[in-house]
Amino acid sequence: MSAVEAALASVGTGAALLVGLIQFWVKLPSPVPVLPVVPIPVTWAIVVLFLMRFTAGKIQAALPNKERSEGIRERKGIATLAVNNLTDLWTAPTNEKVHALIRTRENILTAMALHAAYQIRDRYPGHVTANLLLVEGDRLRVVARGRGNDRPIDVTYQQHTMFCAKAIVERRTVSCGNRKAPSKPYRDILAVPLLGEDGSPAIGVVTVDAANSHVFGGREAKITLGLSPYIALLKMTLAAERRTHAG
Image (cartoon, rainbow, N blue to C red; front, side, top):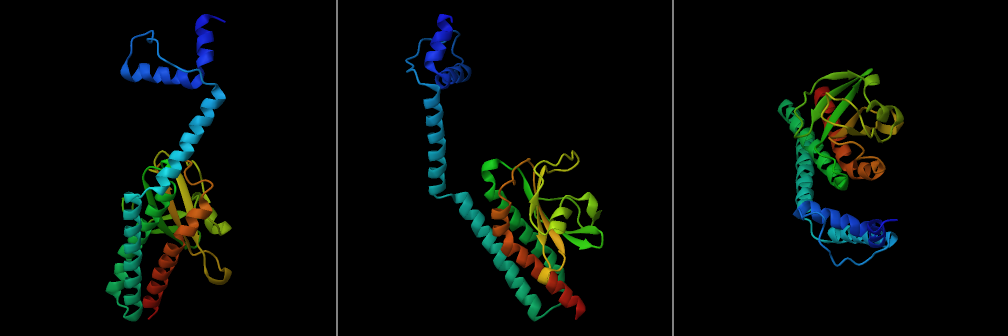
């Protein structure tokens, strides 16, 4: 072993990496001037880096988060407005109020996208949107999309061509991980079924789309729990619309 190799081995991987980063960012001349480096075993360096990462995450979680507070306020505002609109519709149904349900559903889906995005923020999901699709025979119809989603509504797809149909068939939340579809603006999908009453077939599905892949895996249950109130609100809008048309 040469003298240079022996020196690097004594410094350890962490110190060698630090020297390389310093040389790159501040553009120190090569070779690097002698620095007062203390030899650190590789295992110690790994443990220290882990503890720093773990502690930083705990501190960040404990500190007040302005973005999180604003997101919670926005979602509460959307839910409150939706409840008020639904109450108004149930007490005095009109065709104009039914039409207003389109905006209500859009707001609810926006809140769902915001909630899901916050739950996976540490995975850098990119742009997150939400959509509502209803079952029509062997097809799925897109009836609403959240804000920030300019894709068309009132379009239908064959169920067997849609990943989200798996959630309808299996009656549970599923995610795909990495959907390789270059024409689509998303890579990962979380599909949450709208289950019917008393074990009846699902009436539709909400899809939460993320621009980046592998962001929902392992957190399906936790995200679904947080989305449950919004799922209930969406089902109420559908029931209110059916009631008004039936009357």
